Length: 235
Image 1: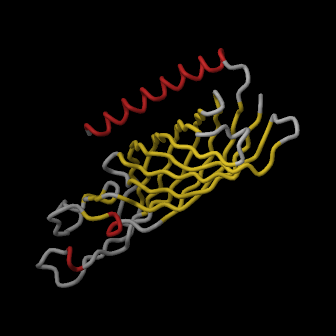
Image 2 (image 1 turned 30 degrees about the vertical axis):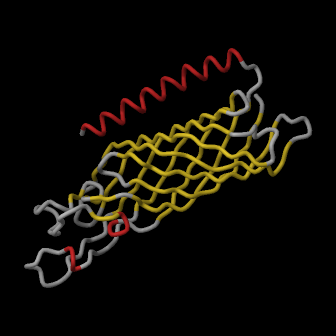
Image 3 (image 1 turned 60 degrees about the horizontal axis):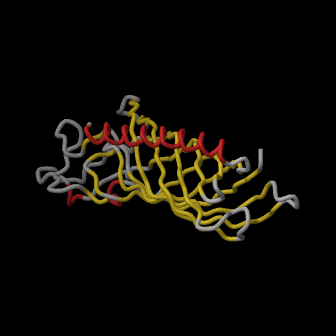
């Protein structure tokens, strides 16, 4: 609970900072580029866990699993995918902030190895795989090393904040919605594919990657590796 509140205040501070910064940027810089982005990619869970969403692996009331320590992510979650879109602005030729929506199909493994089961169970315990879907509103603040409107290749790094819900459903599990947050490090690059002769718009192919290093305890953290099409244009 404490981690969730801490993440909430971090996210709130970030939103307020971006709002103040963007307002100042609009006043001081007449020329900026708007940006629309559509993206998708591969996601691999990282970290250690003692639960699958709302399901506590250490709870005798839910799943009987003998855990002396948390399990690595690859014991709990399978590889999956994510898709989304963002709208934002490139300010000062280097700073891109955006807001958007992201969907992640969380895939939990079907079964656990007999090594993790309580000694008095003769067969591996089989968990019916729950259906988990993550829906997030994203806030991103990235810094480009070179100006994307001038350079063919423009690497960037930054921070991504995710506030959303995990929807958990299944044959033996009632539908449960959990509100949660995550924070990650963004990195990648924009490759210019097309630029208008008047230089008022351009299209880039972008790598959109993120390592999520903090998250609420009821959602997995992911290493996201993806691609995007971005359209930049002057208002």
